[in-house]
Image (cartoon, rainbow, N blue to C red; front, side, top):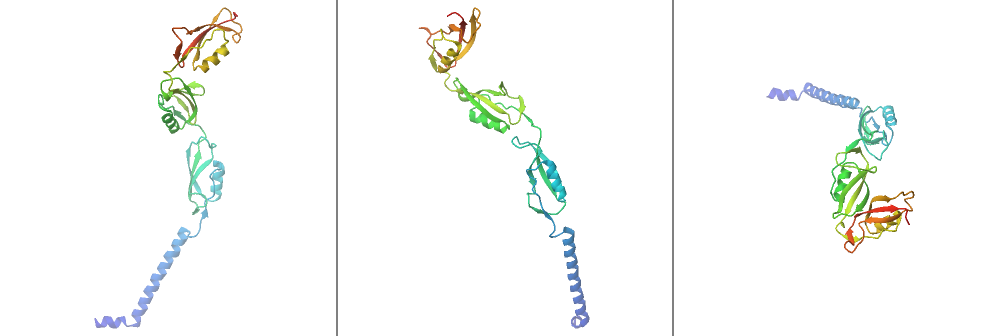
Length: 255
């Protein structure tokens, strides 16, 4: 034990300790600078702004900066086709060169979707379903019906549409809703002696509608022809009908 203690006091031991410390420090410095070189510490670039550019412009800008890219696509109705709508990492993010930038491009072709079942749904329910199907609510009109604010009919492009029909994403859907007054009754107006335009105006004011149009004799000018008959007619036994009832008329040139 005493010999070991005496060895610890020798110059040779001190030189060995010093050499070991220098070796360890040297190895640490080599590892540190090697790692900095390998990872290019402090070297890199800011990600350029490519959001809003066309795909071709974005690719050129990334390649000029020495960056790679990968592409995904979505469809957004109100954005031009073929532009970059998102990028990851964000612009001005500091990255190493040759980093992959992930681009999201707006697809160029409008996809289709199935029209959902909204029959007899309330307006609020129907609107939520329409929008969740990536469609838009268009005009809403009302017609007499015992149901209030309930979808009775739906149309697209002026044509009736039903659940399961295929239409483009973003299409505007027009709805006809019940006004909740279908069980109310109004007076039957007197249409005999009126022209067809006068009859339409009278029926609209009574919340009734024009039904079948028949002709008595040869009618060459229907705009100036006079209504000679109507069905139903206002009588003592029938003076009121339900809102929305259709009134059939007969036109004649006879004055």
